[in-house]
Length: 199
Image (tube, rainbow, N blue to C red; front, side, top):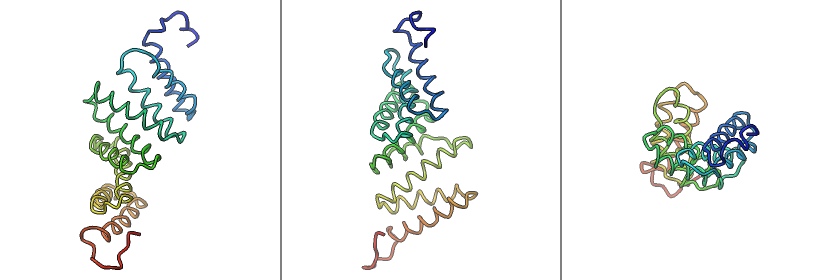
């Protein structure tokens, strides 16, 4: 930054890329405040909108790490908008960003918005081995959101899918089976008794 100052035009896209890349270095080190400052600098630069996608995602992820849910939602929604406009063919990216948006909405207490974001993430993320972890996080997020919203049958369908995928994860498998039992006790096939409760 110091070397380039005064030598590279302030209008050059170099500055946006510099702050973006330095932001990700700070992010990888867990210095989210410094990373967020750099991502904000990148976002303020004028130029190609497509170049804003990465720093917007970075800013959103930093805000999640810092507990700034509402700011994260704003950054990630704008990131999704630009991704759909400029790189809509990159379903994997849209899946990853929607997963982060779901987490931010969860943090903000907006369970319905979280469920919608998780569902989109699941639809966009591939089933490849490398991406299975992200897809599982999205499935877990959606399952808990549907359960919290008392959408019992929809939640049961997601928990069933998790059980199918979590055969080698005993802890997750146990939790999913317990939640599935709970959802079925409240769903359409549940016994119609006056003593049934939502607890």
